[in-house]
Image (cartoon, rainbow, N blue to C red):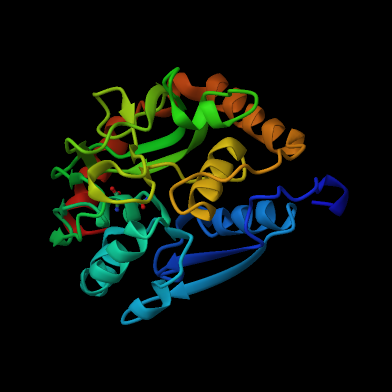
Length: 297
Ligand code: GLN
């Protein structure tokens, strides 16, 4: 994006953002790294420099001073591979979030940061419980694959923070896990099309606002890949503003986001056009899904 899109820097926004990317190599399905690019560019366009720290096992010290923490998606085997390291990072992660860092967790990250993830492929993976959710992948479960759109509630803080009040969020989901929310989180949005948390509740994702659930930072978990933030600039800014303000969102000057909203609109239109057939798997396809779940393919 060109420099001519940059508005003046808001007086109360800090001039630097620290973004921590958890397990960037193991968990980076469908270009989840694009979320980091989106955050750094949106910061840069406002004159805010970004420091990105990719961290893995034993890097807890690097969480100090984090403004935004991001974790992406991966296969069950990747989730198993990072599980122990994630438990070891639980305390520094909790401290960073309680210090006001905003957490965004996508798909496998959403599942792994909850209380537990149970899969027939890799067994039970206990999580650090930073998101008040739990995920179960039933044997032979239908895989939810395709475009998804959510509608934020009318009183959603994300819509309220967006100057245009846009309430739709779009992305791509690919998961067999079914996620249930605990009492300290509420759904991110209502499914307009696609499957969402469990394919039947009509809800997608989980959000806890700063101060809720005993932690001072924002927490969002979602199944949306795509990557999520480039075509949902309202959500990108919500996370950025909350992290920069350590739980008290700073005012970010608006950006001319026409290309982002075009991409958002085109994605929604494409998937609206093809969606009737998307989830109807053939009998052979369903059999292959079941077999795959059993042999770990
Ligand atoms: N392995 C998980 C599932 O299929 C997460 C996949 C992902 O991150 N896309 O439920």
